[in-house]
Image 1 (cartoon, helix red, strand yellow):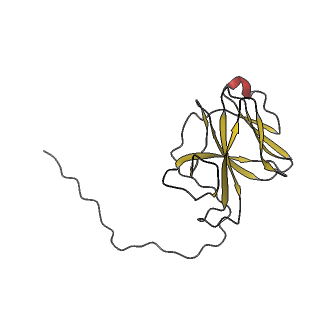
Image 2 (cartoon, one colour):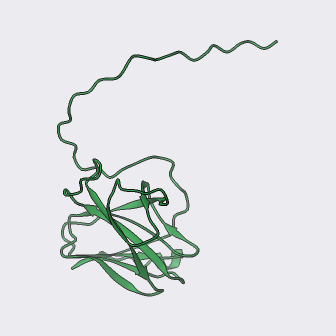
Image 3 (cartoon, one colour):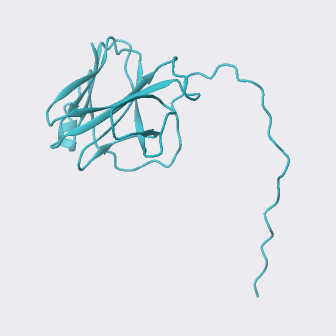
Length: 170
């Protein structure tokens, strides 16, 4: 039982993923991200042990020619890491993780990193085939758990200004 990644591309891939972790205390986002998992071409590796069903995960992967990414930016280092989502560093790279919701009745979930549409046709229930990212999103998203009741707040209305009026040029 667990979450697996399979590298169906022609070169070594590196994978990072994130899972919900209410014990994360660095920032407001309660997710732990960890990486890097090295997968040779054709290799399958387990990154989560235990029942995967009903969980949400986020992942990012890349190889020498492709990247599998999504809409959820966070910073990652070059070295192996286990960090809360909001943790970063001065020499980190910002990458965008992709969201995956695992169905409740799944014991296992495999995410297969493919490099062609032909490979993608063999998707089955516990195996999700994903193509490299083509279009990068400009939206800023973060993983969210239900916020619950938030403390009251109000906008700061002091020190505002108007934009200067445009002059007619003649």
